[in-house]
Image (tube, rainbow, N blue to C red; front, side):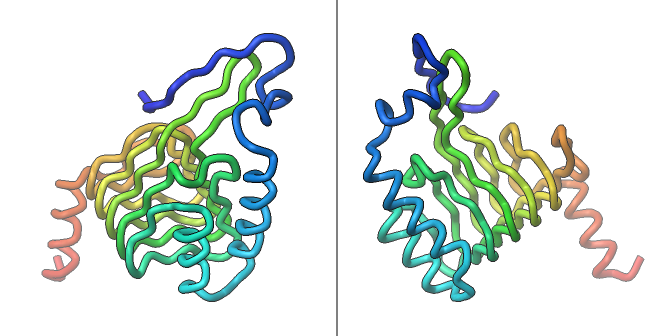
Length: 174
């Protein structure tokens, strides 16, 4: 189960009540920063924008590809470890605005994680070190370290142990 806090709302759906949960000016600032980061080809500039203007925790040598969309409302809840790759057009979410409630959850991505293009990572998820997320995956639950996952719904393709065995076979030529 994802680790999210639930906040009930009454009346119109929670998205209509957005500015009761987050400042209008924060949303405008974040929108501008995120759009600049999505289109810049310079990894050091992207990481600087994420760290200093959005207050995300981003490890050294982490690479966000073009068009990555980080959470607009609560990007400060995103942590990405060192030397990870976030693929083209991936979405990293820390909020869900629903009909009767909204949910907030942190997003913790480990070291040396590979997230393939066009993936979506939902709030309240932890992705362990050296995990691999295939392109187009909807990450709706935690991913154990060293595991390879894919699909919608997400499923484990190789466990960490199977990945080690597979890699050792590849290295030994068998």
